[in-house]
Length: 223
Ligand SMILES: NC(=O)c1ccc[n+]([C@@H]2O[C@H](COP(=O)([O-])OP(=O)(O)OC[C@H]3O[C@@H](n4cnc5c(N)ncnc54)[C@H](OP(=O)(O)O)[C@@H]3O)[C@@H](O)[C@H]2O)c1
Image (tube, rainbow, N blue to C red; front, top):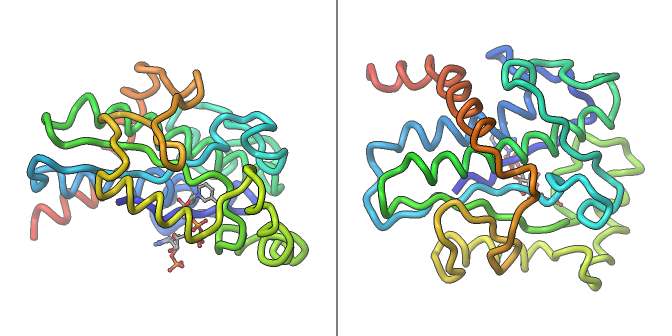
């Protein structure tokens, strides 16, 4: 299960490897995880990567809080400053929605490349207020995320933390039936955005992710 994720308030945060941190955590870390375990999976197995409906980029899916994804070459997306005015919250959130689109691309590519019986599924919990995802945001946004927005879980616009966890567990355990390469929106298989089905981008991103994680894979193999 690749559930770790982060959202920054700029697109300038850089990790020790020189990658932009949203891309490093939300895309490359999951890929490295899958890569290191690739030879150890035994069918039947299921890899679940947590994505987000912010990848749709429309109001219905993000309530206007997160700009939609802006796809670019993986070489650009992997580095800081990939988006206009990269010091702004809008750029940080664009990096976030774009990273979740990237995670969907990789799930589609895993479905193509992994052996039969090793399934890869993308899971969207919906908007889950009250988690630590906004930990880097300004104090007003953090207060809203913690104290105000949880009221939305009484509406279809948001998912409570327990419900999101239960849905995730159901996907991981296979209680929610989902074919490899599919997108599970909370508890049911759905179509992700039209943009998220793009074999050319998927292959290109997979190759780039392999290259970006090469040093770690080699280091581990050598042990
Ligand atoms: N909240 C939402 O509205 C929402 C909507 C759609 C999708 N999601 C996705 O759901 C997943 C869980 O997020 P959440 O909302 O539950 O936020 P959260 O409470 O902040 O949880 C994020 C998790 O990711 C881990 N993490 C972050 N950066 C890491 C790093 N550099 N190395 C290792 N672990 C790291 C955190 O570990 P530590 O606490 O130890 O730092 C934490 O366990 C994420 O993939 C997020 O993108 C959330």
